Length: 213
Image (cartoon, rainbow, N blue to C red; front, side):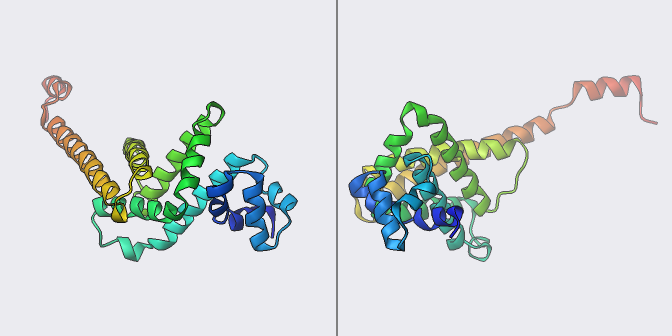
């Protein structure tokens, strides 16, 4: 395998060891041994150390989510259900390695990794929206991803402390947050509609100066 291929292959294997050893060379070496790859070569695939490993793990979750939600599966869902199911699927994928996520977020919370953490949060929101079918390129592209980053981030914090069956508390919290976002979107739509119905002063003055024949 090339180093890029090795990175992809190792990414989903590291968290099982990071639960016990943290995001360390030891955890990486254990994952590499599962593939029969020498530890020094595995380290070449993650030159940035722990942040690189975490980045690759999150990327592997994105890939798994995309495979689990092909177009034919989601096209019959309402957008609210799409976002809910995509977020929950990600958390269910993470669930066997919950402690690894806790340790990963602690690393991303360090000052030198804050930019990376923000980039990964944005990337997750962007990919969730793309899988959900969003193809917007205007201002909505950014507002949707900004709001989803906040929803996903707050839901993840609830999830980390959730001991309920089938993460029921997390599901309920996510439903409420998505409901809040949908209300905001409705208000925005109503506001845009009301603006369109407001007479344009410039258009009115223009017609006074240049009356329509």
